[in-house]
Image (cartoon, rainbow, N blue to C red; front, side, top):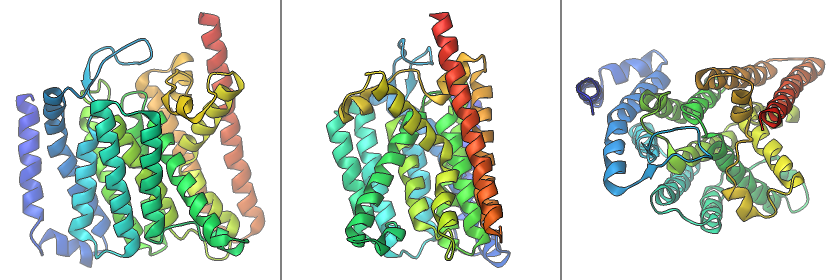
Length: 377
């Protein structure tokens, strides 16, 4: 670690220790309604302190991502940065929460996902092993009471809600893992989505949701210091899958609308819209082209056909690609936020139509990026 990095880590740790005792700044944030900011700051500082340490550990145990023709980076880099994100999130939530069953389930399931990702970064687990344990983590969350409530009104509603919730969590977990293809994308996307959940939750007085969202956002932003281009460390599966799993849990945990099923259903879909779209589009494309024939191949396929790859094929830099994707996701998230305050049904459908137009733009860009790749070949 450089002298500058050591100084920043030391100052961050000193600031963190200063804020830990009860009272002081912590009490002031409660009084002023800024508790979310306190938790964001705590998580950010922990991530700043732990991030350089994860690099040292990665080099020591050999958890290093080597460049090859399938990857964008050209130099070896540590790939267990997710340890810093996990530690920052868990410590911050433990610092603040009086745990409900749902929050306890989220933390237990997230710990399973992190441990699974860490072992995969270190020892390279099989696709079957990863999928089984991802499903197990999702089942833990469901057993602790976190599941889709809208499905309860259908026949076999309890079992339907459980199955849909498990599929949702596994899907979002892998969607974020697939997004982790260029410097800073997954961590910054995680921060943006968490901030959107934070804003919507705080605006609707869902404070536990806001507190967990703030912790996740802070952890992601803190890790960005060594993950932004040129990245000195990667999230790895331990980080990208953990962030995705946490966001999937936050989507289940939030109450998005009590009297409007369209808003309730569409809010988490729009906030997580770009990762979900990228997952669906690439899956359909790979199946159609015969590149993927089963779930194992789907999990293991590492082609350069994701949205961020297509944008880079169109000439955008890594920083430009990340910024453009974040801008699109913010637009979708703001649509979801505005939709909650739209009184008329017509206004809700207009916002939905606007979101579909954004996805149509993404499709066009995906197709243009594919054609540009063919021209180069």
